Image 1 (cartoon, rainbow, N blue to C red):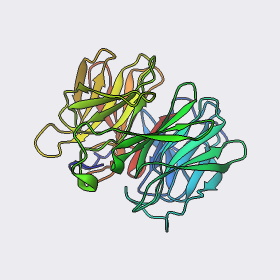
Image 2 (spheres, rainbow, N blue to C red):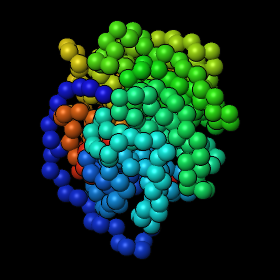
Image 3 (cartoon, helix red, strand yellow):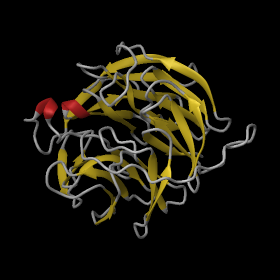
Image 4 (spheres, rainbow, N blue to C red):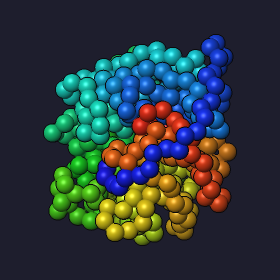
Length: 346
């Protein structure tokens, strides 16, 4: 996670708080406030409408159809009832990660994903100075039931559409760890289209992935130049060209198979922050953004992308950008404190 600086968020009015006792409206956004200890509920037209304390420096989050949000914090996995807007549990990690801290190098949960049947949550836990760990949470018992060693700094966790495998993107180890959901057997696939010569100092490392519908391959963008297409069964890695020319982080898929990729800004010479919209056939539209962003989610109707301004390095801002996917027009909204992970609530 590296990139350039951006401007602070333009002032904008916040929405009125949601009245106590009334359920959260469908389509409300939930963001992880990595610069605080909260998640914030955001009206996509008006801005923040409430927040819930979850634990130090929340990073990723995953929301199930039942409205429960599972939030990876430095202290454990928080469970939030998004309809009632209350925290109902916080599950400590089995893995020791040191005192709870802040910033992208802090110990604790990073990427997180929910099994398709809702029975498990998988969270990538960063262990400063060492290999990461995938912790498996039983959602009914609300307890960690297993741990699996994975790559360094597990930025992202994804699950196969049939639930049979879990994919952990190791940022500092240039890899994806494939974990069998039943046996927890793990195998490593190196994903390094630029090579690994820079080691820990390299900027040319994987960040976030998506599982492509249809063939189950993983898509990992690099630098707005190369898209690594990983076959998790064979371990083969193919590379396709990209066009944004910018350091890339967050990813999402629309219902019709378009890949959205957040560009944070050029590492050296190149283009600035952007959102790439890539069709299943590989055609790309690149929409400029004002300042670095980190992660992205798609509206329920598939027309709008919401891109968080938290960013993991300097240049972040306390808001998000709404991008019209038809023409690239943008709106900026305040949204929590250094928001990273984002989801659209059911």
